[in-house]
Structures are given as C-alpha cells and as structure tokens.
Amino acid sequence: MSVALNATGLGKQYRNRWALRDCSLRVPSGRITGLVGPNGAGKTTLLRMAVGLIKPAAGEISVFGWSPTGQPALVLARVGFVPQDRPLYRRFTVGDILQLGRHLNPRWDQAAAVARLARLDIGLNRKIAHLSGGQQAQVSLALALGKRPDLLLLDEPLSNLDPLARREFMRALVEVVAAEGLSVILSSHVVAELERVCDHLVILNGGRVQVVGDIDELVALHKLLIGPRLDAAVIGGDATVVQATHTEHQSAMLVKVGAHPVGADWEVHDVSLEEVVLAYLGNPAAATLPAPVMEKAG
Amino acid sequence: MLHFHLDARSGVPTYIQLVNQVRRATRNGTLHAGDRLLTAREVVAALAINPNTVLKAYTQLESEGLVISRPGLGTFIAQGIPAPLAPALQRQLRRGLDSWIRSAEIAGLDREGMLALINLAMDEKDKKGAHVA
Image (cartoon, rainbow over all chains, first blue to last red; front, side):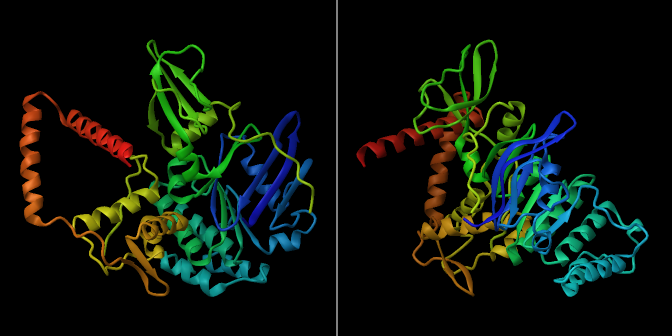
C-alpha cells in the first residue's frame, strides 16, 4: 500500500488542552479519506500540520515521505489545501483568482481550471463577491486542483452549502479523482455525504485516533445485537462492545465482531456507517485500534 | 443501458447495491449478454460516488462471471448467463404466488409478516442445502 500521509505519535497542545495527542495514522494514496470527529477533535490541526502551517510539538508527520516543515517545497508542490473558510479575494474576478494561481504554482494547469469552471457555468469575468456559496466553493476547488496536486486536503468543504451545492461539489470532486487518481482527505461532520464519496475513514475524537479503516470493512465488521436485558456487557464470543443501551427488557449493543460468533440468544442486525460513527463518537473510550506503535524513521 | 440508482437509507453498502442492480437486470431481462455497462467514470458522474466503489462492484461482477471487461472497450454482460425467466413460466409462478398472498391475507398477515415468513422459509432451505453440501 502506498502511503499519502503518515503520522506517528503526533501531539499539539494549546494552553492546557490537547488538540492532538498521541495521534498515529496512515492514509493510503489513491483513496478519498473522510476525517470525522466532533468540533475540537483535532481535524483542522491535523490538516494544517500536513501542509506545515502548524509544527507538531511531539511526534512526526510526513506527506509522500517528506516532512511538511523540513522540506516544505517538496510537500507544497504536491499538496492542495482548501481551508474551512475557503479564503478568496472577494473583490477579484474568477479570472483574477486563476491568474494568481498561475503565478504562484509552477505546475499550474490553466486550461483545465478554465474548462472546469466553464462546465459549471462560472464566468471568468464574475466577481467573487457576487458568486453563491456553492460557486465560491467550486472556485476554491478549481484553484486547489489547478496546481495538479497529488494530495488534496479539504477542511469542512461542505459547511454552509445547501444540499444541491453539496452534491455538485462532491460530483466535481469524484470526477477529478476518477480522471486523475489523486488522493483526497476531507474533514466533515456530514456522515451521510461521506458514505457515498469516501472509501476510507478516520475518526478523530478528543485529539486521538479512534478508528481507521476501509469503510466497507468497517461497516461489515460492526453489528447491532439485540437480546434480553443484561446489566453487564457479556455477549459471549470475542466481540468488542462499542456502545450499549438498555430498555426495561432488552439490551442493544453495537459491537465490533470478533473471530467467533456471538451467543445464539442475540438477534444480529447490520448497521449503517452513520450508526458506526455515532457509536464511536458517543463512546470516546472505544477504539478499533491497538495501542499505537512507534515506527523507526526509515 | 442500465441506469444505477442508490438507496441511501437501505444501509446496504453502495458497491453491493450496484452489484445487485446488475444481477436483477440480467434476471428480469433488462440486460442481455453483450450489453455494455456504463463506464466507471459515467457511473461516478451520474451518482457522485467514489470511483473505487464502482471498480469494486465491477470487479465483483467479473469474478462472479456475470460481466467481462474488455480493456479499452468497456464492461459487458457475459455470454452464457442464465436466461431470464420465460414470460409464460413467470406468469405461472406469479399465479401461485398471488393465491398464496390471498391465503396469507385471510390468515391476517400483513406485508411485513409475509416477507418475514418467506425469508424464514428461504433461510431454512439454505441451511438444509448447506448440510447436504
């Protein structure tokens, strides 16, 4: 598996709060990875570390094998980053923005950027301030893609977009991935949208990595068990309980199944990605991961 | 040409939904041997879904022998897939089913109850089959 981003034991503290703590993960290349977690989970900190805007206080991060702060030119030539507020100069025209991208990026592809915006009916002579939120998001995406990145980082790209603009943004994204095979990491808390678009998932919670894996595998590995009321989480087999809820007569457990089947008195139901994500977010102590292992630098 | 659709609330993984739609279309005669499927990029654009998901579905269909991929040309329904049910046979099975549904209604079963009974019968049949094998 070739790796787009690798983090080992990352830590960053703001005053007395850990933004990231002992954060280790590996994001495969050629995939669209969803980065989910509640506000303050460390998603933005992780993305900003990947482009060298924040230096880790502990641990290491590398992008295609290079350090964003040690070898910034090598990393930045290959990475496109769209921050959460999608900064664009509001008094510029769309054409001015592309001109800016062209002057700042050696690998700039003007023809592709112009064609992309033409397909979306966004004229080059229009002022940024006069575009809708969805169109501004598309211009930000075109700007980030114009430099022909191998890795695209999108921080909450769907925030403040209406459902149609979200769908159009995601369509533009998957089309470019299908055509060019770049790697994408996007943070979001709209899990329903992620399920269509992402094939890999990272759950960050309280600055730590809770879950990393292929979405299809994660969904297949988790089941909802319903059975007679239990006070303790004893389910037989070697399943791990992520979340347990009880009514007067019944217990429901969202579990990660093990190698052995669970007891016969449990009804087993499939779960959606959203149910898996919510179960983990609601139970920060649960994790699919073994304790992090420090790797020796190659 | 088969147009895919997705049911976001079904909880069935996207690639399995695509696989099932192709299977169903060959069974009910919507797709025939030699018909071309949409290219992966066309499916990605139509549904705004992950390209790897489409490739995964097509790979699974190919491993089941239902489709063959011809590099540069596209993905096609394979020759020799089971023919769709003949209309006469389908009508005959439907008549049996319709009368079963009427009896079930008289017995007080609703749609859910009937589906549950059918699933139970199929599960038990599958279990017996597994013992024989």
